Image (tube, helix red, strand yellow):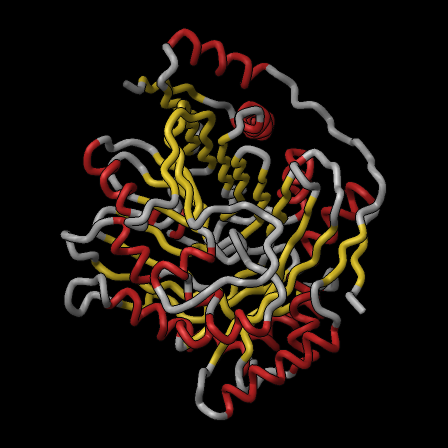
Length: 446
C-alpha cells in the first residue's frame, strides 16, 4: 500500500529540488520525469488545464506492454488495482487500430506501448511536494532530506562534436513534398504530415546531461524524460495530445509555425506574418475538424466544442498556433476506447487520417517509433494526460544511436523549400542543445 508524505518547499529550493529528483529517478531502469517548466499559456490556463509543475516516477516491479488485446491490460489494471501508471504510446501502435504498416528502418526497440507501475511518485504543485511510495515513511523522509539538501552537480563534460546526418537530402525532401501534393491535387488527401530524421551512430553521452541542457535551451510545458532500460526519450514538446479530467476530455493540436527573432521588431513581424498566413491557419483548421470528429465518437451528444482556434503562443524558438477541442466523455468508456478513437493524433498524421498515414509511410525513410507517439501518465482515479512526442532526442545506449526527427504539414498551399526550412526552424532547440554541449552540427545526406 502506498503511503503519502507531503512537504512544504520554499521557492528558492525549487530549481535544485527538480534537478535532484531527476537525478534520483534517472538511476532506475524504468523512470519518468515530466516538467511543465512554469510555463504560462494565459489567464486561467493553469487552473483549468495544468495539473502539476513536476510529476516524476522511479523504479518498478510491474510492466504492462504489447498484449494481443491492445491496451485492455491497462483497462483491467485500472479496474482491479487503481494506481499510478507511467508510459508511452508508440506511433506504430496505429497498426493495431488502422490498416497501416511500419516497414521502414528502425534503430530502436520501442514497443507499441509500455506502462510501468512506479515504486515512488513525486508531485510538485505550488509549494507542496508530495511523495507517494511503497517505501516506508522513514525511507521516504530520508530521500526527501537528501533531495532538499543535496547540491546539484555542475555537469560540464565536453565531448567530441556529434555530426548529425539527415535521412533525406534537401532535394529528396522537396521531391517527396511535391509528390504528396499530387495526391492532394487528385483529392486523395488534403493534408499530410511528412517527417525526416537526423541521426548519428556510435555516440556515447550522458542522457541526463543532454536532457537538462535541452530543458534549459527550450523550456516547454510538456517536457519529458522517459527511460526504459537502455533507451531514453529526452523531450521538449510544446504540444498536448489528450487529457482526461473527470468527465472532461480535451486535445490541443498544434499546427502553424513561425520563427522567433532576437530583434523585437522582426519578432513582432514574424508573429503578424503567422497570423495572416492562409496556409498556416488552414493547416490548423483542418486538424481541428479531424479532432472534433475523433472526439465526437466519445462524447455525450452535442458536447464537442472548440474552446480556442488558432491561438498564437510563443516558445523560445518558434511561434505556434494552438487550438483546444473539448467534450464531455460518455461514462461507459475506458482508456483503451479513448486511445483507439483518437490515436495517432491528427497533428502528426494529416487528414483523412488513414490515407495520410499510408502515404507518409511511403514518403518517409525511417520508422517513427516513439517519435510522433505520446508519453504521459494515468492517475489512480483514471484521469490521464499525454503529450505529443516532438522536439525530442531519442537515444539507444546499447548501440549508441542518437536521433531527433522533425516534420510539418503538407497542404495544397505548401511550398516545398519553405517546408524544408520550417523543419530546420523546428530543429533549432535540439541543434542548439547539442552545440552547447558538444560543438555539434548537422549535415544533409547527399
